[in-house]
Length: 530
Image (cartoon, rainbow, N blue to C red; front, side, top):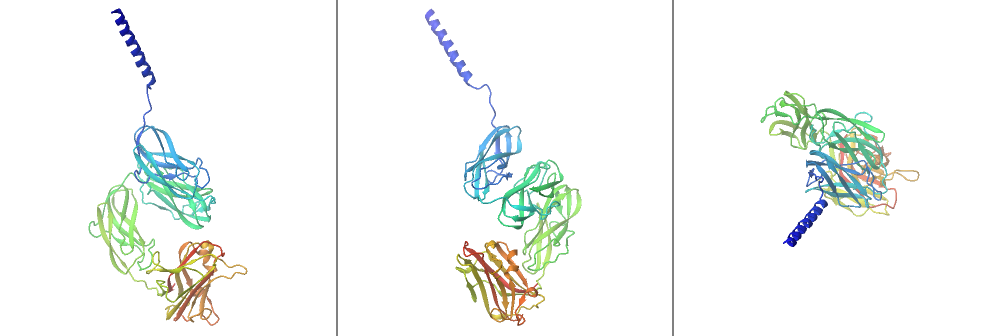
């Protein structure tokens, strides 16, 4: 019996030691893992913005190569997530959410891009996934030289995107700010603002060409308070400013006269003419009854090629007048009805467009290649997509080692322009795939010409213009070319008979016999009143 008690006691002691040892191996406490969802999941990451760093093939990422996204945290705690490696780089972040609610997270990039192009990245956090893309430029791309339009004053060409700015509500991808820049050297760029009222704007990318361009900055953050706040866009030593107004939320209001005719309706001083784009004077004013202040948006659908819209903030209640701004180009003459819509209520108004009175005679539609001669390029023919008018456009490829091209059209029937030398002009659309390849005249290298004659041949009864006068103004893609008769050179015989135009010719050279395949095209040749 004593032996049995001894054995039992030994078993209990040994078992206790084993249990005690196991307990010492378990942590006495732990770190809570956060619970959150990625903004925008399962689509594009909400609040996505790139840091100031550039992405260049063959160049390792640095501390400014970051990605910021929005998350919604439901349980505070630690987080860690990363993307897969795509094109040699990835993005990752880890840390601790100390509070719940909408927040932003900045991921650091690492690695070296292996190729240029646009690449998509999928980010997974918890049970949610969202995506974003990063553009990588070629290794030969350096920093751009450019200035911000309007600097150091108000940013020129400034417009806000469709997104609203509401205190306490995080910005999304539609919260953008567009402004103009003047690029003198193509290359990479980065434009940023400081953080004001809880939000900032930024954009990085590459300018592929020079000249005046529009850049759209993306906003991030959450407005802290309602009111108008100024932002300074900065790019190197160049700055310009713009203002953003945040509201306390959406306004409550009704459109006067809803659901019938808009009350207090008046049109601005702008005219509505077929084929003429609207401008700032093409407005439509109407009354609204505001019962709660805040942001608003009123718009119409596009009817007869034009629409009207206005967004802003009502700072007070009561009956007020809102002026919608028209955009687009009237397509046909006549009276057309428009329905202004704001939420669930709407009202209607009418706008009458008139026919254009300017003389405009089509010399050739470029819808087929009948009576056309094209030399120096092959293949050529009619393209039926991307035309500026009609059912097609005349297209030709210039292939190395050829460096010369001409288009000649001989009209079987003379065309009366119904204009004078003082009022007339030649108008046509010119397509150029790469304007940097066009040759400007120099010593020993004559310029090309654009010719319009009534003799059926060049150099007799002719207007002509040097290509040196238009090539510097062109950009890649379609260009609308307008050449005044009053500015043309005339042959010694006095120039063409303006009632009997029958030949058009354009000829020119490119810089070298060694070049990539270049695409050129023509559409909608017209003689018109300027």
